[in-house]
Length: 107
Image (cartoon, rainbow, N blue to C red; front, side, top):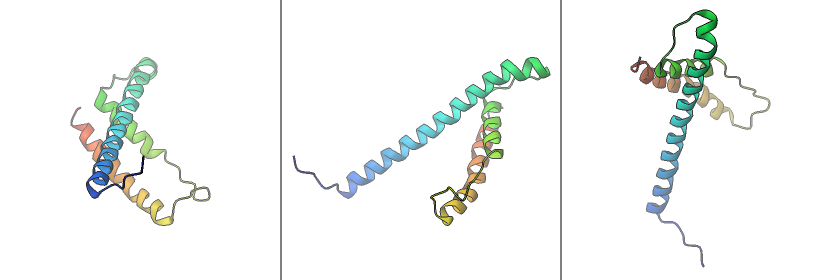
C-alpha cells in the first residue's frame, strides 16, 4: 500500500490529538502525585507530628510546591539549546502558579 501524504486537516487533527493526550497525561500525573502525597502524609506526618490531615487540593498544592522547590538543572549534560532552557526556567513558575491557583480553590 502506498504511503498517503497527510493533508493540513489530517496534520491538524493529529497535532490536536497529541496535545489532548499530553494535557490528559499531565493532569493524570498531577492527580496521581497528589494521591500518593496525601496517603504518605496520612501515614507519616499526621501520626509523627500530630498534624492535620490534608485534602486532595492541599496534596496537589504541596506536590507542586515540592517539585517547584526541588528542581535541578545541569547545564553540562543538557542537550537543549540555551533558549529552550531559559524558556523552561521562565515557564516553570507560571505553570506552577496557575496549577496552584486552581488547586487552592478546592481547599
